[in-house]
Length: 351
Image (cartoon, rainbow, N blue to C red; front, side, top):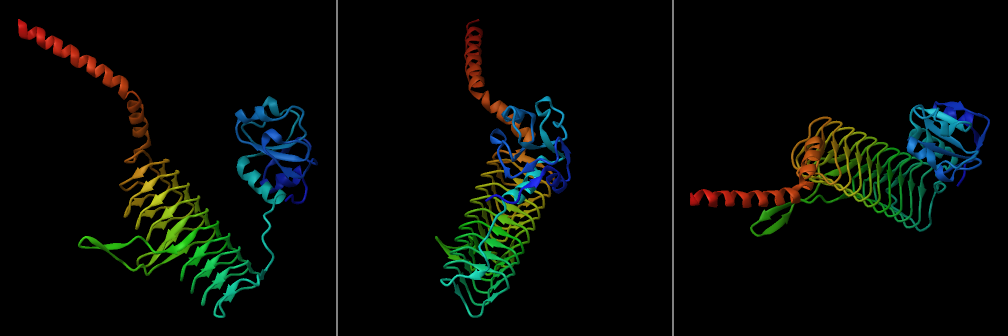
């Protein structure tokens, strides 16, 4: 869907940038750099992408201060900003606004008489809202969402099709949860009983704080006791598993297919690369960065950067990888050296 057309001046004000060129240029659409034409706007963050701009284009571009005076951009209409990616995100909200279903309750939805729905909620087809559950003002529950007994969905939150929020779990305000995510399944807790396993009741809850976003098929397990927490503003990609009693801080980014085992505490502003695994009962410090496919088996200090399995400092890992790549040649040289040593030993023995 295309939103309302605006001038380059208006977009510059929105992005807190400056216009270079004709500020009255009308922008109607957002487009990739290589496709941008008349009425379009695109963003460029790096000089290497400038070659994708079509010759003679009348499109507008959002660029950073560092490349605004590049010869390739001469004569083009620009918005010059400190953060082109952020500015483009704001422009995209205007040009391609997300439109959710209108308020109302679909006839096929099952809403318990003891549930509380605030004004302006949108409840889609086949949604189930159990006894004691609360759905906040302007929240949107797409078809097939399940909200368990005494669960809470905050104001303005959006739950896409197939999301499950189990009993007593709490979803804050303006939270976005994508399809088939499950909030509040039992944590993986068992006690050994001889050669068998005895289930430990998972009696706690999950709390998702305001402005968090969870991708498709994310699973966040309820605590054994207390809470499993996903902090304010945290963004979690698809297919991530958060174990019971984990506490994730604020403004954390977790990329796809990460697994975090139970009772680990992740600080704020942490970045975790795809397919990383973190064992239980660890502390990951504020601002730490964990590389893709890392296997974290010990605590990570504040602002540390770690990679590899087992995870070590990123610099040490790079040096180790460099050595690893040379192992076949090193083995060959070692065999040759061993052969020469044996020859020397044989000569010495005959003297």
